[in-house]
Amino acid sequence: ATDAKNDVLFQKVRQTLSTSPDASLKILDELASQQTTFSTEQKNKFLLLRASALGFLGKHRERVQFVQSVISDISDIDYRARFLYQLSDGYINLGEYENALSYMNQSIVLLPSLKNKNAKIDVFQSAIVILNSLRAYDESMMYALRLSELDREESPGLATCLGIGDQIEISFLKGNRQKANELLNSAIKSCDEQQFFIMSLLIKTIANIDVIESGNYALGIKAGVSLAVELKKSNQSSDYLIQLETALAKAYLKTGDTQQAESYGVQAYTRAKKENVVLLLEKASEIMADIKRSQGQYFSALEYADTALTLKNKLLDQQLQKNLAYQRVKFEIQDKANQMVLLEQKNKILDVEKKLEKKSNQNLLLIIALVLCFICVLGVWLWKVIRQKNIFQRHAELDGLTQISNRSHFMSSAEAGVKHRTAAVSLILFDMDFFKNVNDSFGHPTGDWVLKNVSQAVAGVLRKGDVFGRIGGEEFAIFLPAAEPEIGLQLAERCRHAITMIDTESRGIRFPLSASFGLATMTMNTSGITNFQELMQATDKALYQSKADGRNRVSVFS
Ligand SMILES: Nc1nc2c(ncn2[C@@H]2O[C@H](COP(=O)(O)OP(=O)(O)OP(=O)(O)O)[C@@H](O)[C@H]2O)c(=O)[nH]1
Image (cartoon, rainbow, N blue to C red):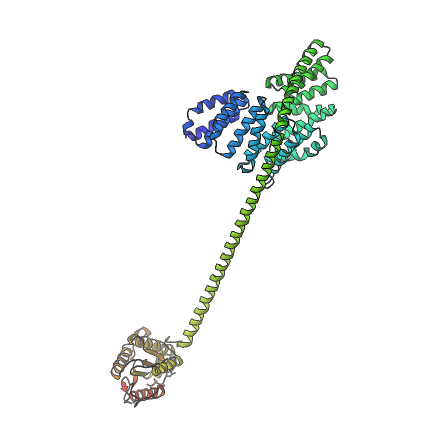
């Protein structure tokens, strides 16, 4: 809760900073008691706002001393850049230009490492303001170009709007009217699109002042009057308003409207005095002297002219110092600019390398994913093929009605069993008794039902490893590996019994079922049956014997 409350207070400070820095400072004092509970971000914000408030109050000595005392603790690089700006702006205002340039240089070298775009914009903007005040227009133009390029990789935003705006102002300052006018439309468009209407207004103001300066008084007055109204409403950039009012005073004077000229002149003069901007006050005084002269108020004119002269001397003195300071550190400024470009390029190379690495990683992942997909598809396909093959094979081996081995599968299995036997093997053949009657009396479907149930009943009493097959219409065979005659007989009896126990009730009528069995055994002894064909024939004979003896019985080949 304290956090949120503090944030609200910070917001309030920011809003009142330019209009009533006194009030801002009071809120900051209120917040100071909570300093220990601040996060690093809040602490940085708090200190930076205090420095700004001191700047707005014109307490620049206190401001630079305060920043000097805290800056070594600021580890966040984006904030460090902003504190450096506080120092260089403070020193400009104190007339200590070399110090101002030195701190500006430190912030310039930080530029390529800054993470926050707004911090970058701040650094560029402050460098441009400082270099403009030193009339180092070529350098400030370079930074203005770089500022507008900050948005290069994204859609145009604040940086583009401010950057082109700066280029226009610098072009006018350099006297390059043509270039400034060429940029006007694109700057206003870009600022309007981003809804930075105040920037559009300032750009229009600068352009309009130039219209008046170039002697186009009527046109300048027409647009300038409404621009002044807008600027007053925005209440933010009195410097530009003072310049516009001074220009309007001049335009009205030149067109003979001394009353309007005086009105604008007095407004410009009062505002400049309040703001204490020497350059603007000097210009306003000069135009006021002209106005008073044209009104015949020579005494007042003289007073204004006197003020203007004093200020002009002060300005010249200031400018001389600025020039000297600039000349002394010019080499250093250019060196820092080069260092910045170098660092930027290094960062760009690192960036490209990172992107390339990421891309090749992505490609590798893609290849692995593709290979895995391919393996999966192949696996599924193989599995399906094998399964299909198994199904076909099972189909080829099974009897469709009873789902036990069909004749050919039974024969080959039994023949193989005989060939590879290691002990005595037995063979059972059985044939349903009077099956024709079942079909004739109860229908073919009931006959089928009987065949299925006989298969199930017999399969239920067999051993694991016995081979059971349907080798004719109602004729079945069982191959018994490792089965002496006694075991064969036992199993045959069990099968016969199982068939007689089948209950036909579920077909709607009870009728008896039985089968006749034949059994033959092939021992390891070579004197008797010697191959599968002989075994089949012997078993068949035994079966025939059972039929002849009255059915529903087991006969053993002897
Ligand atoms: N429902 C049905 N009947 C079949 C099938 N295969 C053969 N049959 C019938 O089985 C009967 C065999 O009759 P027979 O060979 O005369 O033998 P039986 O009537 O069982 O008499 P015995 O073997 O002498 O006891 C024939 O009527 C065939 O049509 C089948 O798959 N389904």
